[in-house]
Length: 384
Ligand code: SF4
Ligand code: SF4
Image (cartoon, rainbow, N blue to C red; front, side, top):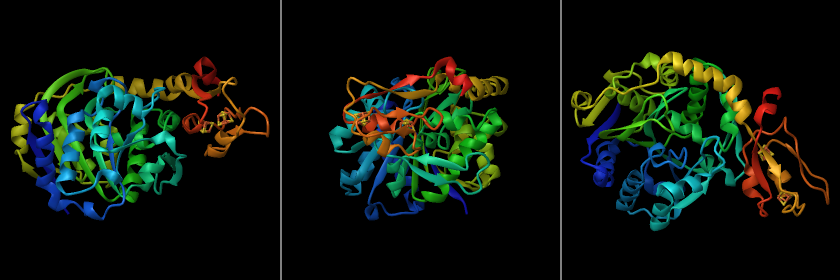
């Protein structure tokens, strides 16, 4: 069954919200759900770090809100959230610094930090590497997902886009923990496809609006690469097809992007151009007007994936540290730890069991006294 993707040419940043509405309207007859029957809609942008260029642009959020309002929906059951990578910051910290939080406040959207609720443990049937993952409770609870990726180069995955953006459904430092299941570029691709396969199976109601207005390329992505203006927006319901079209536009070869190739090999979406129905701007025009995407080379991504999988995350791993002067010995943290990594005895300080801890930082987020802070493992992490 073919899938439909809209390609819209945008004039400039200011015209993005209107163009987003247009992009969604062009494919809305292929949506597999009715917004008005939804109990909880979750907008999932990319909130990687506190740099505007590393995150989904605020105008895309405004565009989606404008579309939802146009359908007469109340914003009471609309949520927006994410979990940044290894950073000590929460999604709300990043959202405040890049201008997304104020949009949520302006329109009455509920901002949710994925670490603010204990994650749920989910099995992944047919997984190649990640047999089980912790998923943010809000993702689990939402019946419609609106995925808002931004196209960026990625030093381990070559590129990050529609499929890779779901890596953020895993709360806190757990992402780093799961990264250790993929110690080469190909293995990491399998890990990302495993995570995506959970989405495909459990979250059938999805809409993706893809930020290709200003993209990031070069070796320093996804946080510090070079920005290029492409002035394009994609919308659709199939992440595999959307990543494939973004790669076609940027002339990026499939063999260089292991997670997209793996997702196609596993039939997690539409992976051939013949079955993608393009509406709006013809694909040939988009390809013609767009410069080649400068992706990190395979040798570089292979080396970075190896370093990250074997050494980087072990050293950079963060573990919870107790601030005894603030702790009131209530034991709430131990009750909320999904990994049973906190030992608590009445009238004593909690003790963190380093080997069981998966660095989700739900304990820190849920401690009413702010008595838990992340601490970098450092060289000691190499011996865990
Ligand atoms: S929840 Fe906070 S205050 Fe309560 S025991 Fe844990 S660290 Fe201490
Ligand atoms: S102790 Fe570790 S695993 Fe448990 S909630 Fe805190 S960070 Fe998560």
